[in-house]
Length: 259
Ligand SMILES: Nc1ncnc2c1ncn2[C@@H]1O[C@H](COP(=O)(O)OP(=O)(O)OP(=O)(O)O)[C@@H](O)[C@H]1O
Ligand SMILES: [Mg+2]
Image 1 (tube, rainbow, N blue to C red):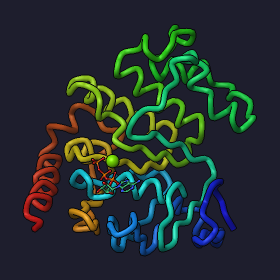
Image 2: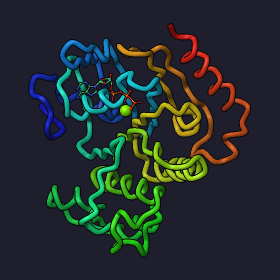
Image 3: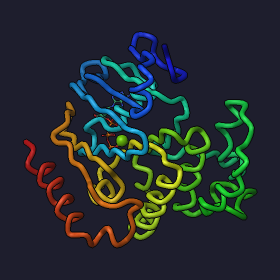
Image 4: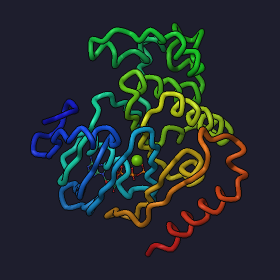
């Protein structure tokens, strides 16, 4: 049975046993993606547990965005994708904010589309996402960091159980990026969301994740799975933890040594 709207019917997304639902938010088995003759993903399997942050790190063009689109049922694929929640928020690589709508309207767009009522903590969410007082502005009146937070707020209002974030901080400067990463770590920890994070920034992956899948060049496959056993939520101090640089170096080595 399909658990998420817009899923290609040919794919298998059966409801699983109650036991599996408790701990697992998503499973992907033997995913294969091709665009006509171009084989992008060969054979990718992964799972995501409740409250876990999983990053996919890989070179540009290896198929990270395609994997996310397949998971969301936006493009055809072979293999099995199972989502155990329908409360899914998606933050695309390029933000899709509408300048003819206010910041408030942009944020609550998923609620309007799903004909859902606003959550009782909406005001507090605007505050936590640093958008309080800007509700009646337009996206072009926001800073880059604020636009990113607005995109993330929209994703959270779409569904905060599983957040799928595609390079959410790629368009901001290094300092804003670091601030947003620490902020996101706190927010996700507070919401107990499960997250799939796409990034080609190894430091970002180590800073935010519980687990990292290092992907190869196209056709992409998992080169290595790496655990990040650092305390959460992550802070600036995490960056100076010796384990942090050890893990970061290890990943860079894997990426650079691939043929
Ligand atoms: N709609 C499409 N039609 C044909 N080819 C596509 C399409 N979308 C992506 N591709 C190709 O698939 C490959 C993977 O693209 P994808 O956007 O998934 O990579 P990525 O890992 O997200 O890259 P980046 O890090 O630059 O965002 C690329 O070679 C790209 O040209
Ligand atoms: Mg991409």
